[in-house]
Length: 148
Image (cartoon, rainbow, N blue to C red; front, top):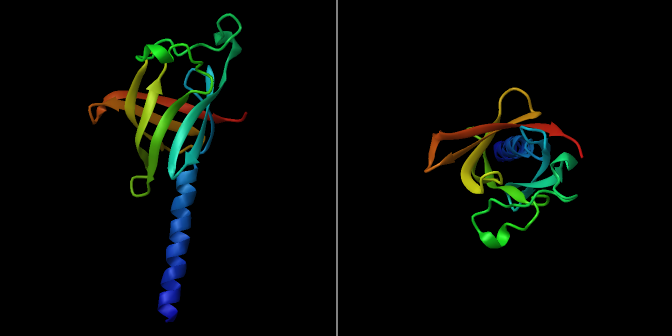
């Protein structure tokens, strides 16, 4: 009986450690060009990222840029501000990365499969978008943690 209690406590501690690792991605991030900030949060066990700030220098006629490269013509008039560009990421504890996600590039209107990871610095998030399920066939970007 004592062993069962000990095993349960160890399982609880291990699951908390994995949950803490998964939560490291949560926060506000500058994109690689430092033109916009993306807030990453958890929704229903998956991680999503939404544009919460666009540098006013990128505004057109006093308004944030539009999603004018979107393949859906009906969506081209929507603002990039408030746009969800990262979705469906799930933490894989054994690989220590977030996988199975999608990332939208408003510059070209394309959506890619994506995964994310940290190297040594928890303030530098590496993301890679790829096509056709081939991870080496893609492009990487680096986001830097910031505040609102």
